[in-house]
Length: 234
Image (cartoon, rainbow, N blue to C red):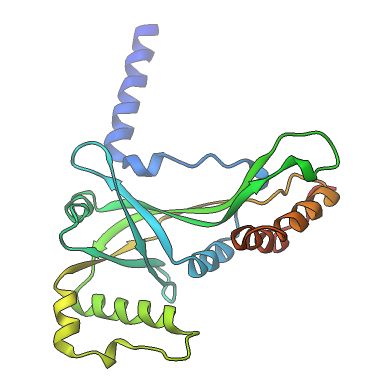
């Protein structure tokens, strides 16, 4: 009987590996108090942090990774992120072969010194991160140009002397488009970890924010993120 259940377990694992992509069963560990469950909040986070690391299964058995800016396409019921990579980048074939991947988007982060606590404890590190998993498909040439237009416009929006893709010669734009490949990743799974000292008491929580605001601009961004989170444990 024991041999039977051993074989059954092995068969179950084998079927799982065949039917469920590897990226899909590798979930991020997130303690309950730091788990992001508000889908709209997570989508707004992605809109505000348009740069991430895409990972797909490489042909050599190792993860293939590329760092990319992206645009968000949230108007339709199917939510997507669009991006592009250099055609000469070897990850293009990995993306095409895998047809699925995981995009990791990091937000504010920083070291938290326990010297600011009202009691003896160890230091920690706070951060915001979202993992986006889904199917990947190639953009058409028209979709790629629309993606580039939106990408440039999104980064130029607050500049006084904005540039726009339509200002450039058509042959220049077309020559660059021939050197890149566009993709979209359909959002099938969202995992969000917002570790922002929610497990601290109110006094220590506020002391952390005060300390961060005396440090670097990166630390100040973390302080701002903490101020927007839920009240800590009393």
